[in-house]
Amino acid sequence: MIHKDDRASCSLTHSHLHWLWLQGEIMKRLQRETFPDVMRLMDKHEQIDRILSMYRSGKGFHFPELPVRVKVALDAVGALLLVDDDEFDHAREILGEAGNRTGLNSRFVLESKTRGSDTIAAEFSTRLGIGASVGEEDTERRPLELTRLQYCAHVNHWLSMILVPFGAQCNGFLHGTSLIQNLRGQGSLDGPPSFSEQHNCAAGLSMKGSNFTVSLAELVFGSGAQDGDHGVDNRMTTFGQVRYEPAQDVKLSLSGLWQIRPLLSRFNNLGTLAIPFGSLKPQRGTPPEIPAPMAPMARNDPAAHGPHPRPAQPITAAMVECELFEAMRAQGWVEMEGWSGRGPVRWGCCLSDTPEHELGWGVRMGGTAEGDTHRPHLEGFLSFNLGRGGKLQPGLVYVMEGEKRTPALVLRSTWFM
Image (cartoon, rainbow, N blue to C red):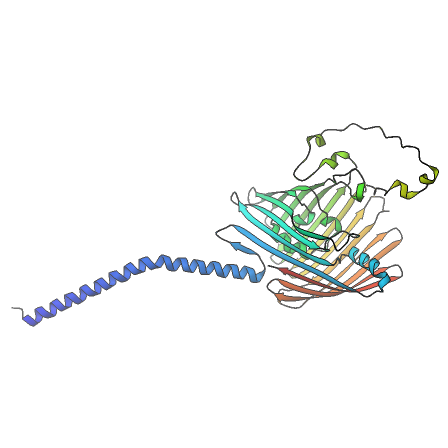
């Protein structure tokens, strides 16, 4: 027979086991309910960490919910010209021709994915003085405006097509198909002036292999005025580049362009996102107009004829660049205008070492030769990393023009956010 104490202990053990089973079921249910919440919190934490890391490294913001990357670049250039007051305007002009134009510039780039891997990007910019043509007033202010629109279609892993219906530049095809990637590359570019010329529209192809990339582009600009008016020429530019990466931290590139400036009235009809069908038709030659008789005094007065149009000379430019470990860079370029050798020849070279978190340095040389005159310039600068995408580059520029010498202290500051 079973004793009463044994039955009592058995019932207590059974109730204790039942209580433990209930506690286990409750814990399992709580775990099932809280596990998704914990995973969502972990995903949000990783997204925050990724956004903060992009901000610190200067690679731009990326919002997973909205597939838009935003990049901001701020540039400021100041100069202290060590010349007399009566030579200040001329010294500022030749300093700008040497590639040191003072002023402020800000650019905002928005890039988004569409149709799978295709990308569409827009660039907005505003500036004060910087980037203006030599001879323009630096006090001219540009409000925030759309300066570039680009669509890139990735056909497959080795072929991409690029369409720029507005604000095309050869610089936009130098560092890949991403407008954000080109933004940082343009900030450190010391290339031919023709690489930075604005065009109405452009179309290009990019073919990528295992360790090389070939890019081709055609750019068109129509002045929208009569031939030779305001010193602005129509131009068609053919651009090409070959990039080769023999190793992971070694990049070699060869870029070149050929530009012609046809004096055809059909290019005057080109505008933003508008190409007339008549531009594709051959035009009949019109007989030259007979000039009206002029007075003897007016015939010999050059001012009566107005400004003479610049001759439409073709331009050829080439640039070689070598980059090591994403910090050391060697670059050389040359640009010739015309085939007879009488036009100006511009050249330049640069050697720099700007590591990410260390003190950097750089040396630039260049010049313009036309006929018997030659205007060389030298520049040396230091590069300080300010953190969070900021750089400060103080330097000394020395421009030689005949017997004149123009020294200047130049301070550059660049921020990428």
